[in-house]
Amino acid sequence: MNRFLCEPNNLKLNSTAAYYFSQTLSNISIHTLPILALAGNLLIIIVILTNSQLNRSSFSVYIKTMAVSDTLVLVLKLISFENKTSQKFYSSSMCTILVFLSEASVLLSVWTIVLITIERTLVVLFPIHIKKFVSVYHARILITLITIISFLFSTRVLFIPIDISAVQKCQPMPEWQNYRQLNVTITEFTYCYIPLSIVIIGNFITLCAVKRAASQRRQILTNNTYSNKCQMDSNENQLMLMLLVVTLMFMVYFLPFTIANALSRWGLPFGMCFTQRSFEIYLIIRTCCDLLKDLNFCTNFIIYCISGRRFRLALFSLIHRKRKPVFSSSNYLESTKLRSERLGRSNTQKIYHFAAKQTYEESQF
Image (cartoon, rainbow, N blue to C red; front, side, top):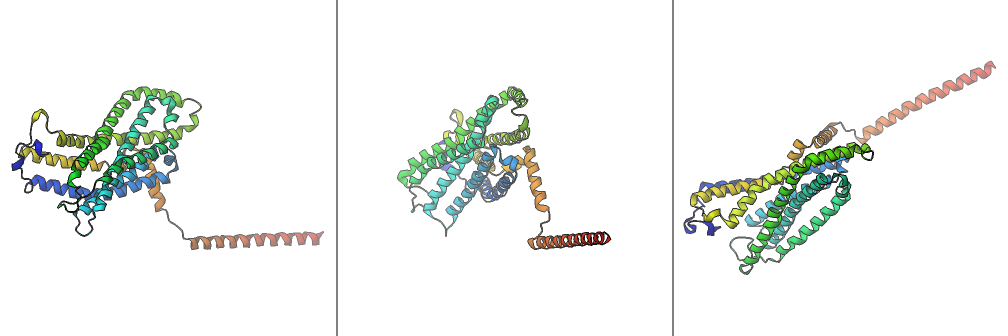
């Protein structure tokens, strides 16, 4: 970044308000967002698993995968920060492991959104062949492949040795700096530039073709083959709408971060350079963009509640179910015993009256 400064030797940030603002905002996001991610994504998984109609859909596979991977991204970021700043629990081997797991989690989360975008675009463009693209079996296979590829692709960072003697923690050996820079470039393209481009193109194609696809889908639903699946199709549409909003919010969250990241890599256009004032403004904007990028991993629960009517109904149903009074097993056994005793006495009385009646009739005879 120093090569894009007008006066790199005169830059002083340690005492500026922009530096303190960026540090404070980063610390708040690192320690607060994992809690929101744990709470929100855990609720998402519980709601999906306890609702059989939503859980049968292929899109539920993507929702549960994103809930797990998004939580791992922010939790691992917090653990990595504590490992770097802690004096007692620092471990150089943990640096490499945490970088590996963090990169794999980010790739899994981002490319799950890419899968959602591609699948939804194919459904809109080819609604007649929807069953070829949308199924729980296909979704599970794709998620399994993406998970394996993400972990295999992230193994390249395991070969970077950590310099134990360095003042700044979790720094590679000096002779491995170029290899690390190459890995950073590859990582940026695989979880930022390429996925964002696919998501933008996919959403553009989807929005352009939605009118034609909607009319074709109405014709398909009038067929007898689909007449008995209206409820299931409604659930599919609700989940598709939720995931459409998620991909659009992914663009909102990641586009500013991508632009800020491009500026740090290629600099300002037309050969311009950063002055002290402009670099402070860029630092504040870059910190806000990082916060937006991290919000992508912890706000899906809010998005689902706003955009998904059936998700809201499933959540309210789960809450009301938890509020119902729960009887203990002892109370249940006591009530069952009382009912059986009452039924026994009633049956005994009926048998006695019947026998007495029979005896009276025989005596009369």
